[in-house]
Image 1 (tube, rainbow, N blue to C red):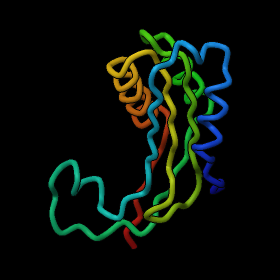
Image 2: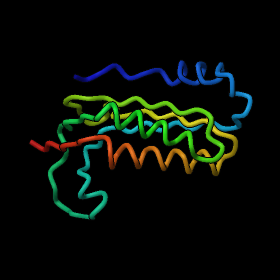
Image 3: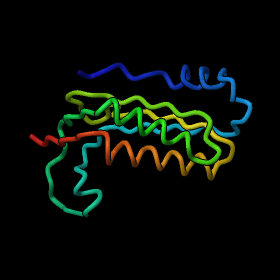
Image 4: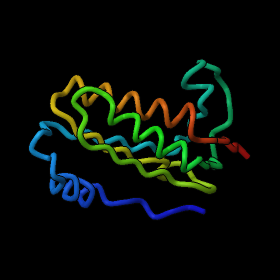
Length: 131
């Protein structure tokens, strides 16, 4: 069932109150949204595909929790939070939010790439609907 998107302002306020916040020199957000352009067109350069009208999106909460926990094992990472939507979503609607806090930019950008990649490849199911 489709969920209300979280507040990034609230997330960052909560993150900055955590006991290890003084170790963090950078926070980085990711906001994935449903795109009208089909994945095959963007990634595989297939031309002439109909636009995405809706996306059926779901996730495995246990796998998401494992992915978040494994991100804490990366060097310099002290804060990790993820939220994923579910249900029948339309272009422009939020799929996921991720917040990473860490010591320096290279560690934080690598952790964000790691976690979003893991979520997309191991935790979610997406079905683009073009009709």
